[in-house]
Image (cartoon, rainbow, N blue to C red; front, side, top):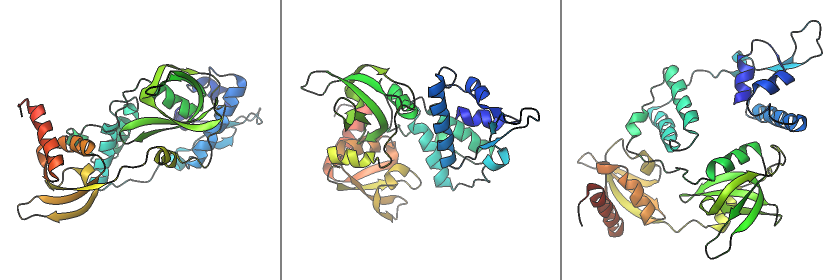
Length: 310
């Protein structure tokens, strides 16, 4: 992102050395590490459609090439979002509100509003983020994934001694409400999944950024499924106020409009506890009809929130 900003706002071609000193994350690197990072970042930007021009405005030293991004080639055409699509963007901002990525998501909302797009994130204040990253290891491991920097940490599984691990981080994944790191374990020379809550102590870099490549055929969801199969699903029947509970509606297998103005939803779920927690975030907009176990969990949660003894 810093590279995009530098190349986009520059009125002329920026030489490589000037980019190195201007862009955060480059100027503290060795010549070799900077070269690898710069080439990698240019390639990744081109892969997502950001065109980087190479050229020079210097009539005397024409061989000193520089780089720039033309604004007319970079800017997107006018974006029109449907109300439900705008709601998803607002929800994404709230999902990350407890992580460092909140600044980026809020920036996305500001840009949409500046373009005249109505995005009412305040309407989603009753929804608690499902992807809050409270583990201390999240941010350093996220940084390691983004920069492709090898790291080491101590790891402790229940009933086992702590062990030192040195890994090449590939991806961070949320799976059934828990955060995992997919990485190459250098000590075992094999792919491994690490639960972030079991990472103890400090995450320490043990190499240079861009030191390794992530496998092209990496499928972290397949890795997670093999280790932690999805639980068997059941069905719940809910009464939901129209226009609410957008997250639940994405899991709906059948929907019927009732005569009293409510909607009747049939929703699949794997965990009674997780679904009950989600339903609680919608307050009075969702009523559980079936099954009794789920209804009991939600009633118990509502009593607890209201401070009423069962």
